[in-house]
Each structure stands twice: as C-alpha cells, then as structure tokens.
Length: 166
Image 1 (cartoon, rainbow, N blue to C red):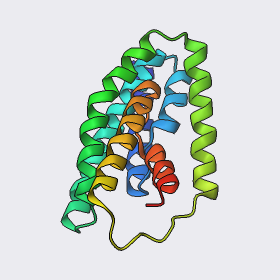
Image 2: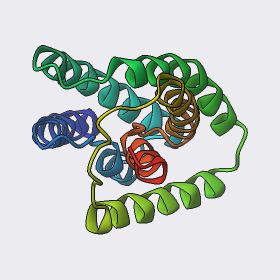
Image 3: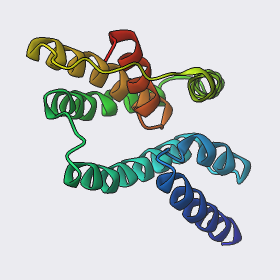
Image 4: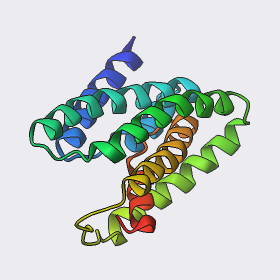
C-alpha cells in the first residue's frame, strides 16, 4: 500500500510540474517506478498513458492559440496512434535488459536534444505533400518507439523536425 501512495504522490508532482514545462514525465517516472519494484511493462505503460493525457491538455491549449499545423499534426497523430500498440507489443517480447538499455539510449538521446537542439527558422510555405509525408514518417517512428519505450514521441518529433528542416 505504501508503494502505491509513494508512486501516486511522485507521479502527481512530476506529471504536473513537467506538463507545465512542456515535457513529458515518462523519462523520470519509469526509473522511479522501477526503484519502487513496479514491473517494467507496467511502469512503461503507465508513464505512456500519463504522457498521453498531458498531451491532450497541451493540445487543447495549442489548438485554441492556433499553434498547430494540422497538415502535419493529423498524419502524425493517426500513424503514431496506429503504431504505438505495435511498439508496446514488441516490448512484451524483448528481454528486460534489452528494454532497459534501449531506455538508457533514449535518455541519452533526450538529454542531448535538450542540451544541443536548436530550432531552425521555419519555411514560410511548405509543400502539402512534404508536410503530410513528414507527418507520416515522424508519426510512425515516434509512435512505434514511444510504444516500445513507454515514452511520448515528442523527442523523436523534434529530431525529425530538425532533420527535415521544418
């Protein structure tokens, strides 16, 4: 019972603070859950669910302020939603140590993105096919990897945006 109270308190604090900061809390919650002896797949799925809920609230705010490029966002949403369960199913069949090392790789990637990523100036007009293709590619990668690792796809999206020059 004490484990659940600690997990709930930590989850509430980190999810609230990091959502306000615009960052998902999965990268902190998964290691904390593991330290509390919560099974890895349970920790990953719970963290991913919390990131999804936080993303819904952030998306509502961004939509109200007209900050969403729908030509890119809808393909990302559709493809990521379709491939996230495939990533989660893959995670069920991987050894625990492999998943943990993949998560460590994600943490290193996410940390380097936070430290070194610089947004490029956006192009004024982009080709519709380019935006949709970008959305499908990034949505697929972010959805699958997010489902596999139990994290949101935001870091993968930023990396894809940098590579695509968007």
